[in-house]
Amino acid sequence: MQFVAVVFWVSAGLIVYAHLGYPLALRTLIALRRKPTLAHPATLDELPRVSLIVAAYDEEEVIAAKVANALALDYPRERLQILVASDGSSDATVERAREAGADFVLNLPRGGKIAAQNAAAEEASGEILAFSDANSEWKPDALRHLIEPFADPAIGYACGQVRFLSAGGDNLEGAYWRYEMKLREMESALAGVTAGNGAIYAVRASAYIALDPSGSHDLSFPFALAKRKLRSLYVPWAAAEEKMVPTMEGEFARKRRMMVGIWDIVVGEGMLRPRGYSPFYAFELASHRLLRYLTPFLHLLAFVANVALLGDGWVYTVTFELQLLVVVAALLGRWSSFAPLRIARYYAMTTGSIAAGLWDRARNGPPSSWEKAEGTR
Image (cartoon, rainbow, N blue to C red; front, side, top):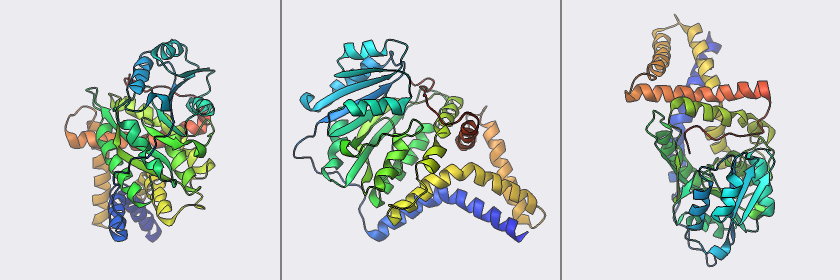
């Protein structure tokens, strides 16, 4: 039973570390290095030419408002190029984007979000390529702040802060995202972020990587650029807003779709190959990405090992009951507004989406298309 006990305690310990220990470790390392948290970068002497790219699939409801939002940004119009890449839209996305004043509208065959972004990047003329979701609304000064870090030639990627607007449902993604943004802020202060977000980010045009259809700018760019000795930063004062999926079921479906391609990125694109990473960045990736994606399997190991250890001491009875309590709380959270039960349900569904995405990947292969999340327009 000694081996089973080791499996249990290692699995349980890694779960706790991934969610609670890692933020504490980041804070400690930053303090020990005496490296300040991300400070407001200096203003660029000359604003670079920026191409703002919006990949869109059947976005006739919001694309005109998105183009209008881009045109209203506090950025010199002559230095801003607005591109909309329609990924085989079957509605009036292309027409409405042109009517709204986009500089360049690509009417592409259906190929997936990454394919649309790759095509737009080839047409872009900016020194900096900025990207946004079709339903994201940027604050007027967001672009100026987003491109400020690129004054440092060592910066290859920057992502801003996205605030999720509640639609009045039971989804807790907004609270979780605030936790994630805090982690990104600390990672920026240590070695660079391990992931961005699709609502507001930018990459140096010379560093842009044309990814495979199963890739993701949010996850692939930070680690791929780190191998090229370029840092990726979180810029909290570059702010955007986006409607949140209203229901927990909708959030589970959204994350499940996202997780289908995770395994291709982690294994196929070389996230796990440490060559080229600084020691601190490798530590961040292992802690924030690898352990997070292994969480459902660590839970399964901990549960099975705990069952085998029942009768081997009172402590294993307590840990088994605690695990059952979390499961019951998650089930009850469907019908209750009690915060601890809702949190348990959100955690269970978020964790389960990782395993569900792997199952979908095994059955159907890598993703090639994309769908907008329910209730976010």
